[in-house]
Each structure stands twice: as C-alpha cells, then as structure tokens.
Length: 496
Ligand code: BGC
Image 1 (cartoon, rainbow, N blue to C red):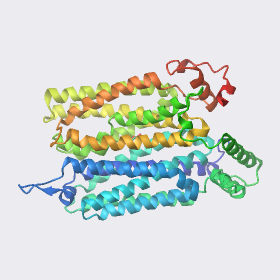
Image 2 (image 1 turned 180 degrees about the vertical axis):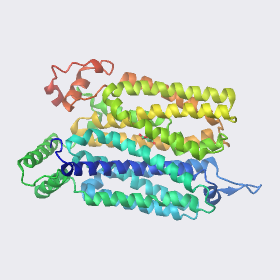
Image 3 (image 1 turned 30 degrees about the vertical axis):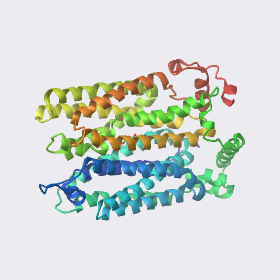
Image 4 (image 1 turned 45 degrees about the horizontal axis):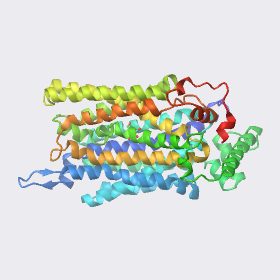
C-alpha cells in the first residue's frame, strides 16, 4: 500500500510501530531497573548478608547472578518465540508473553528471599525474550511498507527510553525508607506489560499467519484493518496475492534447516549468518551494558556520591544520541558507522581509563572527566553499534533462511549479554579484580577489535533490495562493497 492519504489510513501503521516500540521499552526498562535496584540500601538489606561487623553487604557473585540470570530466560524465550508464534499466532503469542512477564515481575516484586527473586528474574526473562522474538516478527509482517524502515531503529530508541525511564523511577523511589524503594520500580512493569497486551489485543492478527494456516478469509479481513481499507478493494486483492505468492515461493524453496544457514555457496550464506551472529556478539563486547546493567553499582563502587544521578545522565545521553542514528544510518551507511563508531568508543574508553589511572576517581575533577568520556563513549555506541547491529542482522539474510538466521543472531545477543553481565561484577567488584574504572581498558580493547571486524567483514547494504544484497555478497568482498556496481545486477545469480 502506498503512503497513507489521511490520518485514519495511517493510524494502523502508527499503532503497529507503537506496539513494536513498546516491546523495546519493556526490554530497556528491565535492564535499567536492576542496575539501580542493586545499589539501593533497601535491596541490600533485603537480600544481603551481615558481616561479623554487622554491616550488610551483597557479594559481587550475587550481583553477577542477579544481573545476568535474566538473560538466560531471555535466551530461552527468544528461541521459543518462533514456534509459539506459529502455533497460537503472533497476537495471542505476544499477549501470553506479557502474561509471563507480569508473573515474573510479580514474583520479583513480592520476593521475600533471594532465591525467589532470582526465579522471578528467570520467568520475567522468558517473557521479555518471547516479546523480543515475536514483536519484530509481527511488525515486519504487518507494518504497511511506508513505515517499515523506521521500525528497527524505533525499537532501539524505545529500548533506550525504557532504560532512561527506569533510572528516573529508581531515582524517585531510592530514598523511601522501606522495601517499596525497589519493589515499586519492579512492580510497575506489570503496568507496562498490561499496556503492551492491551495494545496487541486491539490490533489484528498478522495476515501472513492466516495465509500460513490457509485461512484466506481471515487474512483478507486483517489486511483490510491493517491498511484501513475496504476488504473488497482491488488494492487489497493485489496485496493479499503478494503475500500468498511470497509464502508459496518460500514453501517451494523448502523449509531451510539450520545447516542450510551455514552453507558455503555463491551467495555466501555462511558468511551472512556468521555476520549476524558475530555483529551481535561484538555489540555486547563493546561493553556498553556495564553502564546499563551495573551503572549505578559501578559508580557507587568508584566513589561517586550520587550514582543514581550519574546513571540518569548516562542513560539520557544514550537515549538522546540514538535519535541522530535514524538519519546517519541512511546518510553514511552501516559500514562506516560501525567502523568509526567502534574507533570512537575505543578512543574514549582509553582516555577515561588513563585519566582514572593518572588521577584516580576520588576527586571531583577526575570524576567529571571520567563521566564526560563515558558519556562520549555511550553516545558513540548509541549513534552506531546500538541500532546498526540490529539493522544489519535484519537485512542481510536471504528470505528462506531469514527467520532462523535472525533468531540465531538474537540468541547470540542474549548469550553475550549473559556472559558479560556475569563477569562484570567479578572484574570491578571489591572482593575480586577490584580494578574499578580500569575495566574500560578491557572494553576499549574489545572495541578496537570491533573496528577491525567491521572493516574486514561488514558489507555496505544501505538502500539495497534483497536481490542487490545477494549480488553484493556473490561478487564483492566487504572492502569493495561500498563501491559495488549494480547496473548489471545478476538476479539469476541470486536465485542459485
Ligand atoms: C543492546 C542492549 C543494550 C542497549 C542499550 C541494545 O542495542 O542490544 O544490550 O542494553 O542497546 O541502548
């Protein structure tokens, strides 16, 4: 369908974007909440243990477990997303995922002991993992064409808004005398999950799901609602025919297996699948979640007097700096943003780390310099690797292996998210590595490797169709990709 002529015809597309975006918000809010929770005195009193001096503390190993365990649930949820969406549909699938999230959140919010809190994190994680797999699927199947491009970046932006709002809520409740200080920010997620479920309830099921179930009548009805069009219009006939043809073409190609995703053929399917998996791994290895999962604890350990405010600042920078990426991705392309973004993160982290070594982090000047360079590093991530890793993952795969390759890439993101969340407290925590801000030397170095990786392996796919992307991979290396000639696009080659 073409660009909408009125607000009424644009409304379904806008609603779909909002729902997709809300999926990102749920994910971001959870990340941001836990960071502040672990630094709250009431949380420490509830789940910590008293030392011989009577002082209650939480061991770094517990922080590690609490910070990372959710990613295990998310990993499982992300892999379950596709079978669930195929059996009960995208719509009821997402509504059920919100229910799972609400149950997980309720368990955490009411948890009397640490074991129960951890159980709640796993259950909530499964809910978020399911949402993260189903919402982008629903969106890519339903959003009218005119709005599709913006949605991946929009999803990322809402992750950052979720992190920011969570930090603001944490800051607002942190000084409450009782355990409501941490139970309110956690419990409020039930409201978000309900809003998401309600939004989904108001939207129609994906027409593609009905086509898959061979129910063309329902497919037509939902297509009409999605486009605010007459169910008997000629435009709708052709749109439905397109979906059916595309679905039949995919069925004819045969259900791709996981081994098919790693085939070393002309279209470099192996390289493309590995690119999706590795770009997500490297995105996590930039180390940015040190500041989103543990930011408040990290700044507290580093001697900052108001770590909650600093976390609001860093998450605010992350949110604001994501906005230019909508423009930058199309203007400068994926490859450039990844190369220069990683180089900038490498430089800013090294400067922050060197300053910490030279002047410590216990005086105001040194702390200000540290925060400024951390913010520059986060801004570089937000403008580049944050959104671009997701854009690349979603656009480089041939159709028949797309669902599987994208889900492996997403699972890779959760896997590395878990590994990094697990090791961080051991590296900067007082009882173990206790290296404080020098941890930035480690992530600065990984960012250096991100630059090299992007330089050698990322193809420039800005503005290309699926056929052109096939042509690009078949005939060029990553280094040549920005100068590829599409005047003789060999569509036949792309069908091999
Ligand atoms: C990453 C998350 C991260 C977020 C920060 C996302 O692209 O996948 O792990 O917390 O960006 O904005």
